Length: 330
Image (cartoon, rainbow, N blue to C red; front, side, top):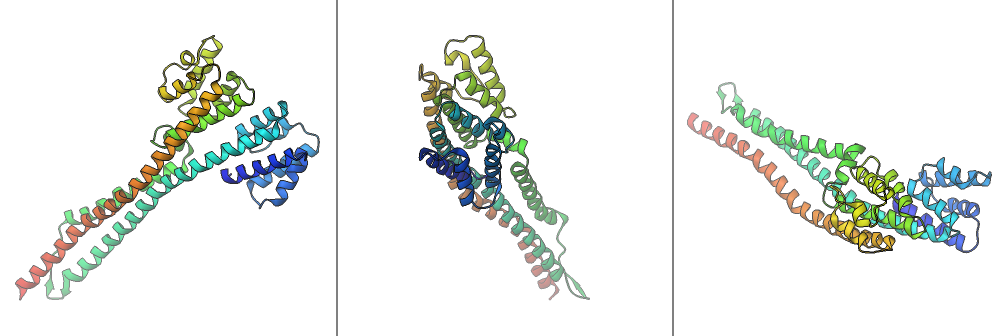
């Protein structure tokens, strides 16, 4: 579902609850103002289940809503502060949407550039073939210069390389395990992942949850990602009685030492440390993604220029050789 739509819906629902409207009525009124879509369907089903008397925890378990969302609603109900939790969730998903828009641009832009480069490359190859056929057989009595096989290979090679890179890029967009793998390794993507991890931990701790509960939620959210094993180690060390966050976190390969230091430096208030880490890595992610986007434009121009130049060299060679052959015939 769209993060911006989800954030807006939660902010509206929080306002209704603050004015004294019950959760079921608030969900009903909210769905009445929403357009058709997956989010409206899930919220409408949630309202229907609650109206039947189904407990919130069971109703949320049956819905296709984010795991963090369901857990935070339960926390809000237990703490009698559901409007406050919904407001925090709206802030969380607004930040997630801001990062996701940037990351989507960073993922889609190279695909568009590669697709354009492939189209130019194939177009030049077809143009080369038609010109060669036109020049090499001028009439029944003259056969001009025939290009060597190396020229044809030089024309085909850029198209093959670009097609291979485009296939890898499309696989990265479509295949979830590959996206999850790169999410914690590529610049910009890793910082965004760290920001969202810290934000989720901050949400749980700020609403009265303990560190063990927050780590359990983080493990569920990241169970199939490279950071999952490190979170497992954190929770194991916490259970074994490590006194400070610094010793509990130790040294990992995915979560950087700065992240650990920021949380550990908060002392007895880890929620504040996770909030500081979330803000730092959110700003870092935004800066790196913007920098990569600005870099992509000149790089894409160079790539397109190289493709055109690489394929124009044999093209011009054939034209020059054919003109020389015509001159020798005269």
